[in-house]
Length: 278
Image (cartoon, rainbow, N blue to C red; front, side, top):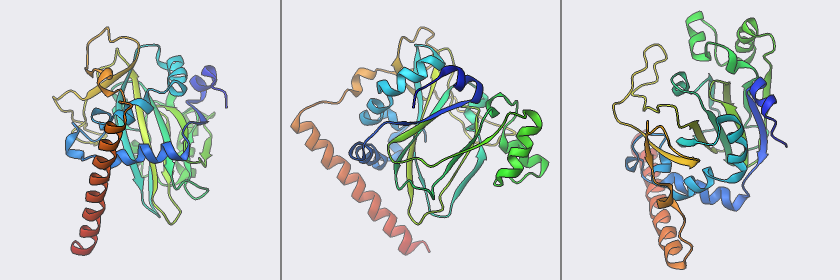
């Protein structure tokens, strides 16, 4: 699919686009086992993962988001999402985008099929509100028709768009687009979100996600300059050169065993919780 900037600006999303093969999906997914205590916050896997940084800096992504954000771009958020069978993430926006502008790339990694839809409401990025606030009007934000009805009252162009991605495909949307995900399958659905903004934004770490009273940490989150220059110096920007993958057998072998160690620890911990925390 070809990326059209005018269509994106009008509708608020673009895609899906082909990106990773199954082998690379699995390589990227292995990074989810890195200990979370190593990161500054939940959406900071790129802080310790060269694979996440390298995939997030891929030209197939940058060539599209440069049209949206300009040439000076930060990767400010990266987060693996494991959605369990029968679960849905109700209509929402990521509330960080109430404070700054940017785009999200949602990449499907594993167990995606016709029972794991992702939905957005086109044109909703132009609405000066967000789905979480609809709860104040007693609107059921799990119900597609109810949420779409509210969006159409503000912008009649709004339409429900539902996608059934394959592993390795991604969709781009404006940070303020209304979206939801659903897993009606029998397996955990795995994905990653990559979040970008231009360097003239000030990125913060939320202390909570209370849409009525957002609070922010005094600590600056780690960002990666994936394109251009950081002329503003507003943010904590890590040196991307430190994340370049070392192409040698020793390093790759060491990294493989490190990942396997963390993966084994993660699996054993999950088994322990199932047995002893019922």
